[in-house]
Amino acid sequence: MAGRWFFVLLFVAGLARTSTSQEPPNFIVFVADDMAWEDCGAYGHPNIQTPHMDRLAREGMKFDAAFLTCSSCSPSRCSILTGRYPHATGASELHQPLPQDQALFTEPLNQAGYFTAAAGKWHLGPHAKSQFDLIKGGGGPGGEGHWVNVIQERPKNQPFFCWFASTDPHRNYQEGAIPKPHRPSEVIVPPIFPDTPDVRKDIALYYDEVSRFDAGIGSVIQELERQEVLDNTFLLVITDNGRPFPRCKTRVNIDGVKTPFIVRFPSQVEQGVTSDSLVSTVDIGPTILDLAGVRIPDSLQGVSLKPVLLDPETEVRKYAFAEHNWHDYRAYERAIISPDYLLIKNWAPELQGTPPADAVRSPTYREMNRLLEANQLDEKLVSLFSTPRPEIELYAWREDLNCLDNLNRDENRRAVTEKLLGELSLWQSKTADSFPGVDQLTPDGFDRVTGERLK
Image 1 (tube, one colour):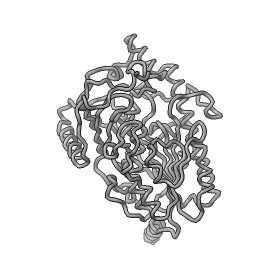
Image 2 (cartoon, helix red, strand yellow):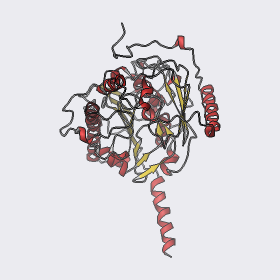
Image 3 (cartoon, helix red, strand yellow):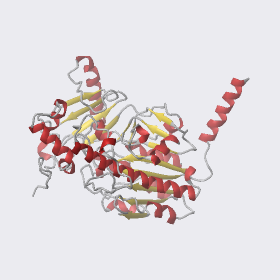
Image 4 (cartoon, one colour):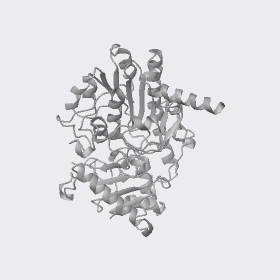
């Protein structure tokens, strides 16, 4: 008898989660600027101060296999808001404005009666601005200053979608970003960096800006609670690319394209759940439209994650894809990610894997250069400075999150490599992506040694 009542309760709970509220849901997407997926308490960091992201994970769903379509600021944002891969947006390179003919998923939301607002960092160019009802740039040192005001001043008779984009934790760093700064002794140095005092200080300052981003999220949560709309608001936390350090930002390895992906939405999502299902940021637009009850336009190239929100074990895609185009330096790489492997194909292996210019100028990169010249840099990190680079890289990413052990020459995984190369080629064909030739790639805009702009 007890067992029978247990299943009745489960059935009732399921009805409660899947039933639709009379009020249309609201949506807020919080976007960090250069934050690594693992640098918050929700993903296991023991020291970094991120109480609000941690709360959202406790009260919602955390995704452990969520990936960006690229690891570059503006192309990533254009991709997310159009629901299209970077090469399909016409804005695949850093600072390229989104063309006028590209539609954001805010357009169908506007037509369905939603109020749409963007606050903080924009970085999509001028043409897309007409597809939001309100845009507020700036907002203090971290770009979070207008977020609460937008929520307070929104039309109260409309559901809303807000794109809250921080400039944290983008370089350059200054002390005093938060009241209680992180100490270098609290830093967890990833194995892709040397563990030296200069590197620890650099990472500690980066942590401070992650915490400031988190504080901005907390202020919005508090205002939503005050207005009694928190539980009817879908909250999502992501980043636009990896941390602004060597081997991270711009790269299509795990440190470059894996993103935190935290959802709180009580009507659809159970508390404290983790999903291992493969998801992509190109799926955000279709998901929001689906949850809002709005038809998903054919132009969107992602899929709705609503089935995964209802059941974290559901799979909606077999592969995720990412790309590396010009970001300060000439590049053309593509990656395909399966539930177990990540494969990278590099069409220009003669080019060094130089990090973005701001990272080239960083204390961490200078320290790596110093150790390299002294023949003291770890052998697996020397590849950052080496050419030619491998044309094909294969990583068992769940076991090798820092992509240090290239398995491409492993004969036991030859079938895996061939399968993924075939799927990558098929995706490129379907999405009209092709290599134009090295000579047609945008040339370097910065010096690869100093990080200074070329004249």
